[in-house]
Image (cartoon, rainbow, N blue to C red; front, top):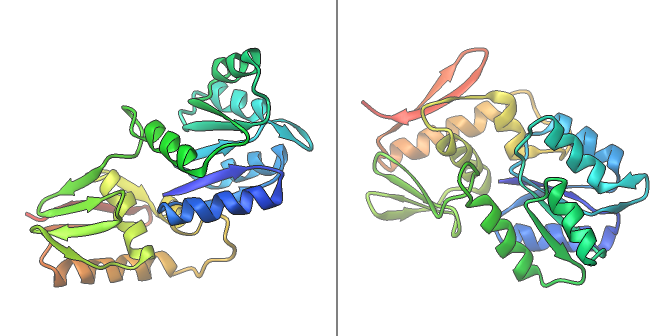
Length: 224
């Protein structure tokens, strides 16, 4: 699951990304309002952690723009502004939660997970299809109750397809979920990881099939 961190404090943003990676989340980091807008146009994120005091403007402007477009992206506001009116303004602008600096990383992760567990959001304690169960907290895959080891990239592909099981997931969305803003991606990278995932599912006798919808993307469903 890929997150966007919008924070102009370079050291803090790196610590956040490191801590979130340990909790099982991939992150892209941007440092300004302009970069946040570009990232949101380019990548489909699971959630955003948004600082308000940015060098080129107020983070609330990014949040307000999302909500005006009826974009339901979960947003956790992270800021040094801790007055009552500041919190009210943030929540009324569409923030899902508000965490004041300084904070404990454990609390940030817990609040993020709470946001993502809300109805209509992406996080569940487990994802199931046929005889496969994926634990979103431990990142463990079980087939017929037996645990199996998948690589981080294979797990990322599995997760996004499981979350949208029965629906076509555009190839670009899969690519964004795996790589985000990490740089140039080989043209066949998604195909390679989907192929590896198919092989693993077959080897472990998971009753799941991944259909390629040519020119569009992928669809995961129970094997008939």
